[in-house]
Length: 606
Image 1 (cartoon, helix red, strand yellow):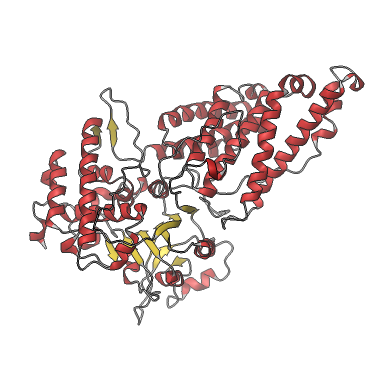
Image 2 (cartoon, rainbow, N blue to C red):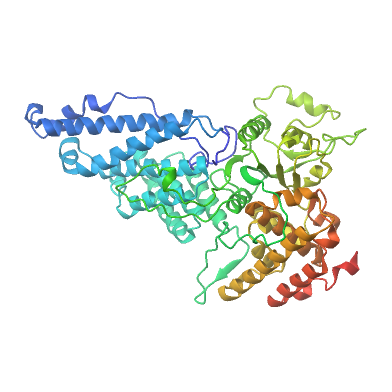
C-alpha cells in the first residue's frame, strides 16, 4: 500500500494528481440523471412513448450503473488511509460496478448514442476512472502489475482519442478533466519508467495547457505551468545518461529483478525475517518532486519493488484480479508514502504498520528529510538530545509555537527524534536515514533485544557535489542505482550501453563478494545477519557497504562526515575497508578509466 497523508498547507500544485490513497473531493451531489435523461434525449428523437421498452430499459440501466459507479468512486476518499483490511471489500464492489458499466456501454453503444446522447469524452471518463482504480489498487497493495493495468486504460484513452472533442465545447471544466487525465497518465508512466511516453505526454500536455489558458483566460495557468516544470525537472534528475549507439537514451529500471540480489550460498547462516512493511518519508526542502513524490522517495520506492508483470487484462475485461490469478512469487512489501507529514501523521501511520506487522517480519522506515539540530546546551546524551529530522510543522494550526521557539531549553517538537522510534523497536526494525543530521540516530539503544539496524547517510558531501542535492541525495542514489552513483562521483555524465552492461555485470560480482564478507565476518553484529535472509534488505546492505567503501577510497571524500555510518557499527577491516573489496572498486574504476581519482590503498591513509 502506497499512501500519503493529507497536506493542506504544502506549497504544491493543487492540479497535479496526488500519489496517495485518496481521491479528489466529489462535486456537490446532483440529481440522478436517470430521472430526466429520457425526457432530455427524446425531445429531438420523438415522443417518449415511441421509445421501445427495451431501449428505455437500456438507458435506465446505464444511468443506474453510471450513478452507482460515481457514488462508489467518490466514497473511496472516505476509506481510512492506513490499515490493510478495511478497504478491500469496498474496492471490490467498486471494481465490479465499473466492470459492468464498461461492458454495458460496449454492448449497447448504438442505443446509448441515439437515445442517451453518449459522447466519446464520457466513455473516456469511464476508462479514466478504471485506470485510477487500478492505480489506487497499486497504491494500496504495492503490486506493480496493477500499474500496467492502469497504463493500458490510460493508453487506450489516448489512442482512441476519447477526449479529442472536448476542446470544441465551451466548457472549461471538461478541458480540466482532460488535463488531469494527462497528469495522472504521466505519474503512471514515471512509475513504469516509460520515459519516452512521458516526454510525448508532457509535450501534448503543454500544448493543451496553452490552448486552455488562451481560450478561457483562467486563473490556474501558473499552477498548470508548475506541473510542467515539476515533471520536466523530475525526468532530468538522473545525473548520468546511458546511450545506445545511435545516441538515444537507454531507460534503466532499478526495481528488483530476478538476478538483482546476491543469492544466498551454501554455508551462509542468516535469519528468516522478511520485509513486510515500509514507510517512505520525504521532507527535504527544495528537492525535485512531482505529485507529492520527491526524487529520493521515488528511488527508494523502486528499490523496494520487483519488476512488474503483465496481468494480461483486456480493455473489455477491466476488474480486480483475484489473488489466485497473481504470480506465485513473493509479494512486494506493503508501503506508505508520506510527503512532508506532520509528526502526528507520521506517528499514526507508523503505529498502524507496527500493529499489523506479521510475525517474523520487518518494518522498514526510510527518512529523507532536513536535519534538525539540538538548540542550546544539554546536560545529558539521551535519545532526545541529538536532534533528528524535520517533520512538517503546519504552523498555522499549532498553538503556542512562537512561545515554544523562544525557550531553547525545550526540545524541537516538529522533529522525529531517535527516542520517538524506541517504542517500535519491540519488533524487528530496519531504519535508513538520509539527512544532514543522520548521525543523531547513531546513538540508538536497543532496549528490547529485537533485530535493529540503522543505515545513516553522510552528513555532508564534498563541495563539488553539493550543488546536485536538489536532484536527489547521493546516498539514496547509491542504494537505488549504485553504478549510476559510482559514475556520478567519478565525474562521468554519459556512457555507452555496452560498457554500462559490462560494469553492471562486474558490480553483481562485487555484490556477491560483499555478501560473503558480511556472512563470513566473525565480529559482525548478528542484527545484520538477521535481516540478510530478505532479498530486498540483503541488496540494500550490500549496496550500503559498496557506497561506504567507494566514498572512503575517493580522493574528494576526506572528512569523516563524508562517510556513511551505521548502527550497530560494521567491522571496518572486514567490510568497508576490506582490501579485497577495495581491489574490486579499483578494478571497476579501471574499466571506466577513472582509477586516478581513487586512493590505491586507502588503508595507508588512516
